[in-house]
Structures are given as structure tokens and as C-alpha cells.
Image 1 (cartoon, helix red, strand yellow):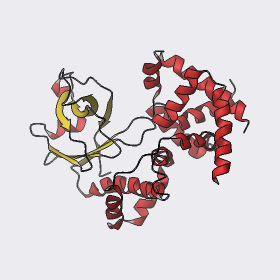
Image 2 (spheres, rainbow over the protein chains, first blue to last red):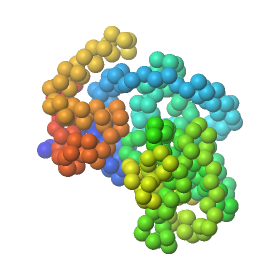
Image 3 (cartoon, each protein chain N blue to C red):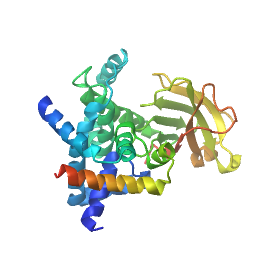
Length: 245
Length: 69
């Protein structure tokens, strides 16, 4: 296989969304300095995008636009929003796929939704005044963040936002923690009541150091939570990163 | 881009997708439209991840040759 073909395949998988997280991050960085790769990615997006017309159209929930409007009315630093918008073309590409399903209901949905994604990310970053604030992003490959978790290590208060997560019928999302101090098995932090509102929990009994080094997991389980006490379904993982850099 | 032009692109893309074996065509669509990872595809089709990777690579190459642009 020639280098040129390598680049084509890599770009193709990037657009399909099948690269693993490490590869994806590497390609995102490489395309900034490799015009050939960047071009190949654009070409693949153009080639495959017509498939989006096939995506099933669904009505957005009625409260969605009111929520978006409320968020757009909130004060927001325009520079921060701009950088959040442009820094991750990948997220936008993924998002576009999601909003394709809304297209019939509102022509402007993709733009508004893009702003919304930017706002949520920026909103989490605004916590940065406090050294004790941490955030974890639950994301896999090409899928936009499904959950954002933020936690104040001082108060142990945790907020989980289901960014794009929708609870499938008959299933529940369950939150887990894995830490060296807790042994090898994941420990349940409970079932997440996924609706439109952020989920708040207080993590009593876990010290800050443990939480900082812990891995959090969110798995899809039968309704009511895992019957075995261990994660049984597909899971997303995230580690805490400080919001103050 | 107007609707007619989009349809023409879609028609061409479908014609090329039809050139892929059925499971590979499914895999490409599941990856792109439903966010399936290589592992998800491996589980769905009951093949090792390595095989899925090969499928995707060959499918991409075949699609590109077929679309010709």
C-alpha cells in the first residue's frame, strides 16, 4: 500500500468514525499540519455525506427550542465560544450527523445545535476559577460527548449532564467508579435518572485523592440497574481533569 | 446544493455501495449513521476486530474507486 493510499484509508475511517480514540486524536493533530490528509478528510466527508439524507427524521422534543433559546440568551464570552466552535471540527462533523435527523423540523437546527454544543463545553470550562473543580467527558470515538460529569472535590458534589444521551426503553444508565483504593471491581454509584435536567449526586465517603485518580464508567444496564452488581452492558469511561489549567 | 443535486449524489453513492458485499455495506452504514465502533461491528457481525478493519479498508478503497472523485 502506498503512502497516498494509507492517507486515503485513514481519512476514510476518520470520517466513518471507526478509528479508536488515540488514532482519532492523532489524526486530528496531523490534519492541522498535513494538507494532503486534511484534503482527503474533506473529500471523504463530501463523498459520504449524501447518506445523511437516509437518516430517519424525528421530531425534536417540544421543550428543546425553549431550552436552546434560554441558553442563547445567557451571557457568554464571544471569544471563548468562537474557539470552542472552531477548535473541534470533529465534534461538528459528528454533530452534523445527529442534527440531520432534525433537519425537516427546523432548517436552522444545525447551527443552533452547534452553538449549544459550544456553550455546554464553554459552560463547563467557566468553572475554572476554582482549583477544586474537575470535569470528565464520556465519549467514544466519533460519537459526540454522551455525558459530561463535573465535580467539586471540596464538597464532593457531582453534576452529570446527559449531553446527547437518551435512555433506551427498558434500559438504564448506571454510574461506576474504579479506583486502586477500592480494589479491582467497579463500584456502583447508582442508576442515572436520564431526563433533560442535569443529574446531581453527592459522593459521600470518597476522598479527593481517590476521586482524582479514579476512572468513572457509565454502562447501559437493564432497567433498575445491573442485576449482578457489576457492569454488564456497553460502557463509556472518563477520568477527571482539572478545569483550572 | 439543491435537492436534485443531492439526490444525484445519493444515487451515485448507493450505486457504489451496492457494489460492496451486503455485510460490508451494512458495516459502512452502521459506522457512519449509527456511530458503531470497530468493536461494535465485530460484535454485530461475529468477526474479529481485525477482519472488520480489513472490511472497512477494502470498502473504502472500493468506494473511492467507484465514485471516481
